[in-house]
Image 1 (spheres, rainbow, N blue to C red):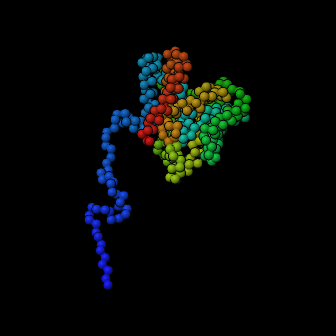
Image 2 (cartoon, rainbow, N blue to C red):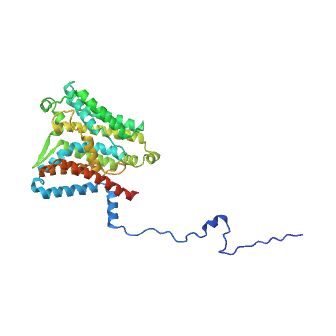
Image 3 (spheres, rainbow, N blue to C red):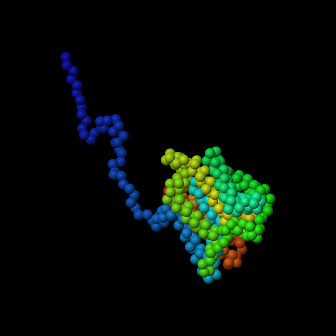
Length: 366
C-alpha cells in the first residue's frame, strides 16, 4: 500500500506563505518622504533666535538706546552718560555672572546678594578689627564667598535639596550673620582711603576723553569674556550646559553631576565675593546694608538676557545685555524726569515678555 501526498502550491500574489507576512497585507506601499516645504519667515526667525539666545536682548538693547537717543539727543548720547550706565550695572553684571552659572544648571541662587555683602564686610572687618593687611583681608573675603557657595553646592548636589529652598535659607542665614558680625556698623570712606585704599581699588577710574571707565567696569567685562570662553570652549563649560539640559543623560555620558554642581556653586560664591570687593569701590565704604536687592537684580538681568530658567540654554553675553537694558531704562527715564515707578513697571513687563519669548523659542526644540 502506498500513500499519496498532494501538496498545493499557492499561486504568486495570493495568500502569504508565512504567518508574519500577514501583517503586511493592506499596509501602505508609498515610499517614505520628508517634508521639504520652505519655512516661513517667522519660523526662520524662531530658529535663528533658538540658535542665538542672546539676540533678543541685543535687539531690545539697541532699540532702547535708539529710542532714548532720539528723545534725549546729545543729553543721552554722550560718552559720559553711556559709560555711566556701565558703572551703574557693573555690580549687577558681576553678580549676574555668578547667577548665570547656577541657572545654566537649572538651579537658582537667592543668596548671591547676601554672599556679596558678607564678603565685603569680612574684608573690612579683617582689616580694621583684626589689623590684617588689606591684601590678606581681601583673600579672606574671597575665601568666605567661596565657602558659602561650597555649602550651597553640597546641600544641592549631595543632599538633593531644591536649589530654591537651599539658597533661600542660606540667604537668611548669611544676611543675619552679616548684621551680627558687623554689629550693623559702616566703615567710612575716609578711613578706607587712609588705611586700606586697596579695598577701594575697583572705584578708581580711567578717563578717555569724556568717557569714564572704573576698574569695576573693566573687571566685569574681563570676567564675562573669560566665562564666555570657558562656557563655550572648554569641557567644563559643555558639562555645565549638559547638566542643566538633562542631568540623567549627562550622568550616563560620564559627567560627574554632583562634582559639577559643587564646582558651579563654589565658583558662583567666589564671583559674588569679587562683586563684594567691587561694591566697596563703587560706594566707597563697607556697609552691611548695601546691595540688598542684588539677588533680584541679578535674576532680572539673567531672565531679560534670554537665559532659560529651565537650564541648559542661554549665553552669558545675554545676561550682560539684560543688565544694560535695565541700566538704559533706569537712566533714560530718570533723565526724562518720569516717576521712578515707571522704571519698575517697564522692567516687570520686560521680565514677563522675556519668559514668554523663551517659551515660544523652546517650541523649536520641542
